[in-house]
Image (cartoon, rainbow, N blue to C red):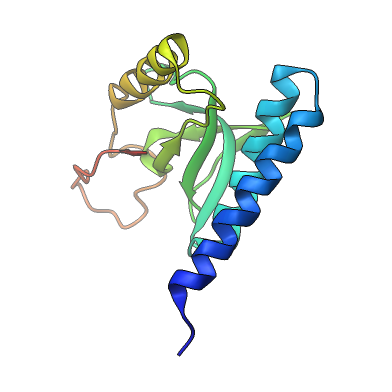
Length: 146
């Protein structure tokens, strides 16, 4: 059997090296987007096929939004709207979100906590097309926040 510790250690080293390579970019926005893409690619390769990795906003039926989210884990069997490379994901389809920060300092940490808090307040509803089974039960599984 393969040594999974070695497998993931090698991936960790590759991710760290790729993140460091992004330092050649001058723009902090470009560095951030490059690092977000590195993490998204890794997740897409390792998550079950049912989970898609998107970038955009999570919304609820009351038109409230999470604001911009770097990585949204989405139930692939659900619908997300795509607008210019960004996704609009119904909260019922969101499995989780990930905020990626190059530096987790005061203002960056506060910003990430605000985004997570805002996303946690979004309301899931049984009226969304995500619930195709005809069940009236709305799962009380909240969006997972990493």
